Amino acid sequence: MADGFERMVDEALAFFGELKGNNSKDWFAPHKQRYMDEIKKPAEFFGQLLSEDIARITSKPVKPKLFRIYRDVRFSKDKTPLNTHLHMMWSPVEADALSPTWFMGLAQDYFTLGMGVMGLQGEDLTRYRAFVDTSGDNLSDALETVQTQTGASLSNWGPEPLKRVPKPYDADHAHADLLKRKSLAISAPIPENWREVGLLKAVGQRVKDLKPVFDMFDRL
Image (cartoon, rainbow, N blue to C red; front, side, top):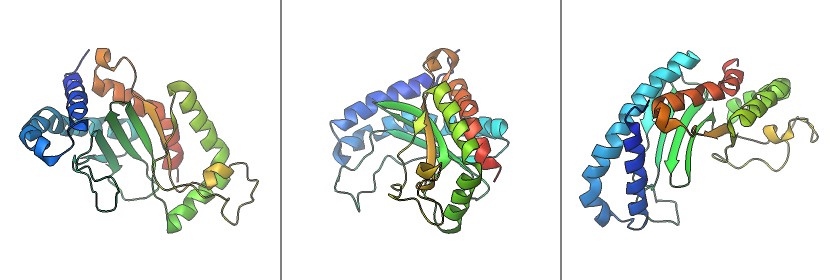
């Protein structure tokens, strides 16, 4: 049954649709309270509830974060000041770059839950590559299973993959594509029946669906 968060989703889509055509601080100022009351506060509550579900399903505690509506435009050619999407993240309490982070995105053209490791470098990147080298078959099987069952796809978030397989691995390595990556995340659409079963339950189901890939990293 519905859990009330459908109102947050509907309001977010309506609000961001209006914002897209009026992306300025002047427009946002008189509408800020609407954003706070109908989107930000419910999303923060949702984040807290889902963090409990993620911890229960994975046995790994996480901390929720709602990304700011204000864009960082310092290094961007696009100077529009506000984001027209709702992005949330649940990061592991225990600091380890190879402990997967969960993320949810809502915009006019997507509504997804994802999970993965992002922006690896140095020793962490070396660990990831060694993991792919020794456990790539099992990782690929887990990715294929999740993609088949949920319609998930590998995410393009994070740094660009290398053009060549990094040394000391062979150029024709069986998992060359995975070795070239500095991030590995998979993202799946929220189940279509989320309004009927409730958003929290539907997203929790996606956590369970993505868990085979999560478990691969959890063994490291």
